[in-house]
Amino acid sequence: MFVGSSFLIKPKVVEISSLPNQVSEPEIIENKTVAVILVGDIMLDRGVEYMVEKEGNGNFKFPFLKIADELKMADIIFGNLEGPISDKGTMVGSIYSFRNDPKAIVGLTFAGFNILSLANNHTFDYGREALEDTFLRLNDADIKYVGAGLNEGEVFSPVIKKIGNTEIGFLAYTNLGPESWKAGEKNSGIAWISEKEINKIKEDIKNTKERTDILIVSLHSGEEYQKEPTQFQVEFSKMAIDAGADLVIGHHPHVVQKSEKYKNGWIFYSSGNFVFDQNFSEETMEGQIVKVLIEDKKIKEVAPINIKINEFFQPEIKKSTTVKISLSSQRLKQADTLLVKVEGSSLDEKISGEFDSKEIDFLKLVDLDGWVGIIGIDVKKKPAKYNLIIRVPNEDEAKKEIEIIKRNFPITKLLVTEELEEKGYTPQKIVEDITTKENLILKEVLGIYTKKAYFDKAFIYPLREIKVVGAYGNIRENENLAIQHLGVDLEADIGIPVYAVNDGVVRFSQELTNYGKTLIIDHGLGIFSLYLHLNEFKVLDGKEVKRGEIVGLSGSTGYSISPHLHFSIKANGASVDPLRFIETTKKELTK
Image 1 (tube, rainbow, N blue to C red):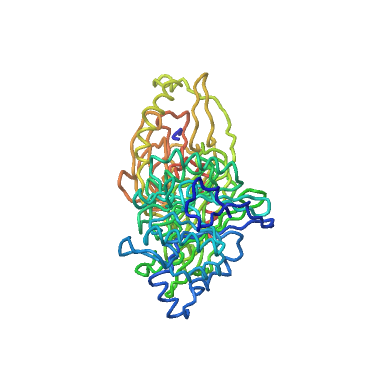
Image 2: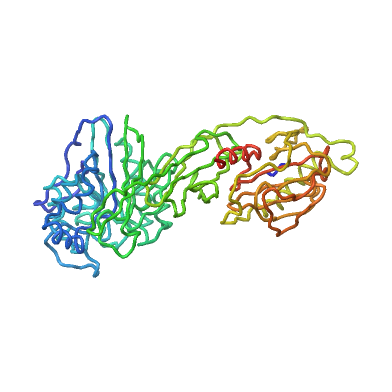
């Protein structure tokens, strides 16, 4: 079948002479491997301050006691500070306004923070006086800030830190709050943006990248408590990577959102809370820190680490359970099948994941103490390296790099016997009917996606004896015509029993001009088996079938030179080699 610091650019205007600016030569810290840690929202007011007073004897080191050792291993520690650090100003925000006690700086320095984003919707909670006081206090503590400043020139300038011979830049933006918060030519404010500023921001990112080796862009945006990023988050983040950023770190939703590898960069749409008092849900008491390792002026590794916030509002690394993740291979050819196993005695919650930004549905099998994901590598998948992400509840997100390499397929002649010619078959008609008619019919059937799996055991062969008479992927040519054989032809005389390769539901049982009597079984999770050129159907549409049940008899109907069974597998929309698919599942799913 063919179905196939960290320092800012000098401000343009500074009229408040009592505030020191942040301009100087980049700070140099010698270190071969540079470690950067990025965290989410930090709020040290309200319930957090209450716990500091009640449980920490008023010492603001208290919120960071469980995680400071982990943070201090990094050269740069970056986070988003929610609200000013000041005892000045008047509340002008909502009832959800924050003003962090000036003593909170002790905690931030203890934890090792040396860059903070102030581009967020709480920076102006106590007005411009508290904001400008925050600048003074952070400068005095040698903590650099980005995304806020005394005027527009400073606000939209990067903080650049030089570690050894590597220059790392930071920019920060938000689209939340009123436009009046945006810094002007002569007034302080934040890096507030809207869609109309996108082109300018794109140029700022491009120009900053030219001055730095690594560029990290912070975005405070999105909808609170929503697990999916907004369109603005997605479009802005991808624009930033396209413009030259190496990584985009997001915050504001107060829950962890998805992350992805986009082109040559990384996007973390929301890292959730880091220090916060939102104990009304499990999601808001969890977060993610992102550890970035840099060598030779390039990002070597990006590792998201899950954290939980305890009842005292202290973040700590989630303790790992005994979980084993294994892959059938990390280097596959086109049309191969990748099988992911996640094993562990305590894995009661469902596993999730992505391959090349496409969701993977995992299933629990009878023969395994864990979960399995089956990923089809399409026959036409571009040879390259792709990201595999595996998310296990209460575990750090696991990322693996999967390499797809080119597979060479044989080229043979597209034959038409005299008997077939007498029936009206010609190479041109065969190709035209298959590509414009029959494949469209099958595409509609194969577009059905059943979220659950009908099967819970490994797949089996469709015949008792397997002898290949037509290779998978074979490219059949006739003069200027060519079509690829996206299945395998198995030797079978007319009337040989054909077996269901696994449990499923019959979705299609019709006779087509070229494919002959065609049967399609849906096994769930986007996996289908196809049986062509049958002589007889033993099951019809809608029937539930069991693994090993006789579903038809082999034949030679349609465009068929001799009796045989054409057998195909579709996995998650990908055309895969069906025999390799069965070999992989049998090997990996049978103890």
